[in-house]
Length: 107
Image: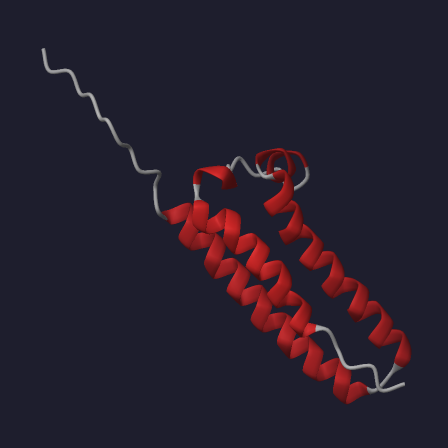
């Protein structure tokens, strides 16, 4: 009988890769939205989009601050960001990066 005993087990890589791919796509979409809002030059749209970007950044900062409890309770995804240091610190970086997608106040 062969017993498998691993001293070090790596978590699977795909959840982290998927997280980063989705976060990068969201950032690109937010930047396109910023360009459209700046071009439209409408104050209600500016206010709505600013609040939308802050809400998306708040989701990332909650992934950083609350981890598994937030992801499981709010997003209903069975994923533990604490298992992946890159996802844990990446969520903080993405929350700050998303704030660069805020439209300029020209009013």
